[in-house]
Length: 270
Ligand code: DGL
Image (cartoon, rainbow, N blue to C red; front, side):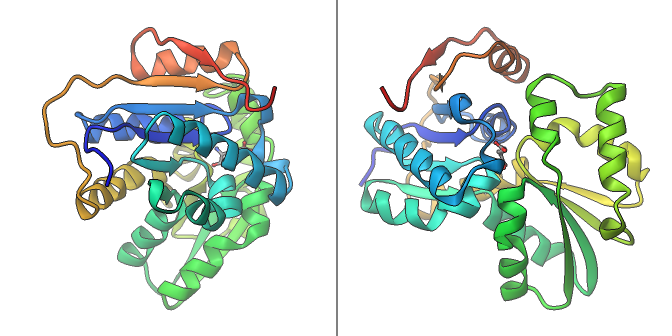
C-alpha cells in the first residue's frame, strides 16, 4: 500500500491539465503534485488511439518512477484512448482516475430527459465514450457531440479572451448540432481557459460544465475511499515536467499557480 504522503501524478498533452491540477491544488492542500505536460506530442486529439496509448504508458512509467500513489489522466483524449489500458498496466502499483467518469456522474446527478452538448477533440468525439457512458448510467439524455479541433492549438498559443478566439468559438457553437441544449460539457481540459467566452456566447441560457473542479472533488473521494488521502499538514512540493520546453507552458504554469515554477525537461524517448 502507498504512503499517504506520496505525490499525485497528473498528466496531459500540454497546459490543459493545469486546469485540473489547479483545482486539485485548491481542494487538496496537503498533497504534492507531479505534473507531466507532453508538449512534444501535442495535440493528442489528432493522434491515433495507439499513439496516445503509447505516450500514456511512457508517462505513467515516469510518474510511477517518482512514487506517485495515484495517476490522474487530466486529458479527455488520453482518458478515452488509454484509461482501461493504463489501469491494467499500472495494476496494484498505483490507482488511476480519468476526467470522464467524474463528469458522467455529475450529469447523472444534475440532468434528466434533456439534450446536452459536448465539445472536444476529434479523438474524444470519435471514441463516442461520453455517449456510451452516459447511456449506461442515465436515462433520457440526448448527447450531441462536436469536434472542435482548432481550440487546443489556439489556446496553447495563448489566444484566449481576444477577437480571434471569440470568432472561432462563436463559429463552433453556432453549429446546428449544438442547438437547443440545456448544458454543454467542456470535453477537453484546455477549454476551461475559454469558459468565459463560451458563457458569454450563451448568456446564461446554457450551463457550461467544466470538469476541473468536478474531477478534483471526485479525486478527493477516491483518495478517502482508498485510504491514501494525505491528512497531515504538509507544505506541498509541486513539480512540473515537460517533454519539450515551450514558453507558453511556462507562462501558463506561472499564471495558474501564481508563482515562479521550475520546469524540468524530460524526454519520453531518447
Ligand atoms: N487537454 C486534452 C484533452 O482534454 C488534450 C487536447 C489535445 O492535446 O488535443 O483532450
